[in-house]
Length: 252
Image: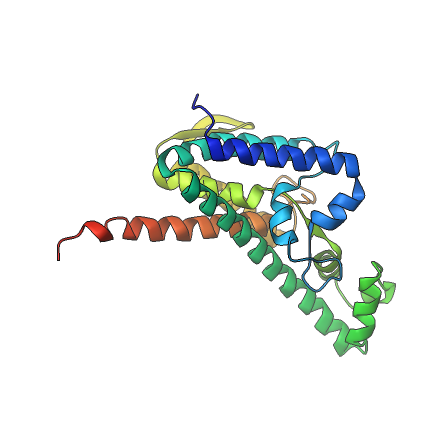
């Protein structure tokens, strides 16, 4: 088992401190540090960063446990080869990428519902006023499908927390660097090479994000597009670094 590396250790401590603090402070901490939709009056710029260190409250302790275990397992291997500064830059970049794609998808969902309501006689000012109070108009349900209504309301009033987007970036980087390393899911005890495991995991997230549920049935409550955003930024950064790693050592 690989020893924990310095930056990973610091990130683990920060996440645990955030978690304990949020348990002590309660709802005000989640209200202030979780990430809201950018047009929501409860949104603040710092939430783009702080949401990465927040996790679902008790009794959902598996959220932080899974993320921290993955951070230790994959992060330590990557920091060992990259060093702390490069690793931290990669980790934060993937977390920001997760926030960006999640927000972009929410923008699409919200604008889609908003335009439908406006075309049916509601004013934008009226709609935003109701939503800003944390409320909804039951008449909207008559004009939007169940899926459209849930996406519309969820996009504006929902929040996102967790390090999962950054973790998915680490998974992609690990698959780049150690494609033949064997990994296993708890419910699939057969080891699978990272070059197959990670793309498979991303396909599950893509399916769940597009379908609006879980591949195992029901609503997952998981920000699948945040996972995909972190993975996308991780892939682009790894592709760029791999393409340019020998630039300074070429013959003229």
